[in-house]
Image (cartoon, rainbow, N blue to C red; front, side):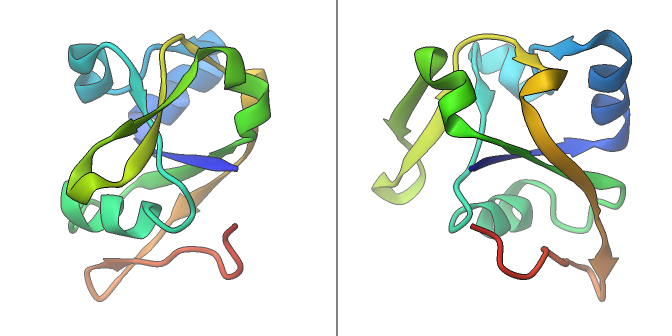
Length: 111
């Protein structure tokens, strides 16, 4: 699985439209930013600190593999980048990512 963080309006737009080219940063960069299970909490802390109303989306990397590239980013780590729109049917699951004492709480056993 790879993971995408969306604000509530971005998640609602994907549900309504059935496809998305991502959040404003994704559109500006020309690809949709994803993280691995190991990376996603740091991504939330770095780019979404204190932001309420986030959603965590899980996508099976195999479902997007033809347009997925693993590219070096933060700290030399490889991050998954999707060079195609994300379709709603590629989202395995989505759930709210609550804030507790200013920190996002991720589901246990994220893999």
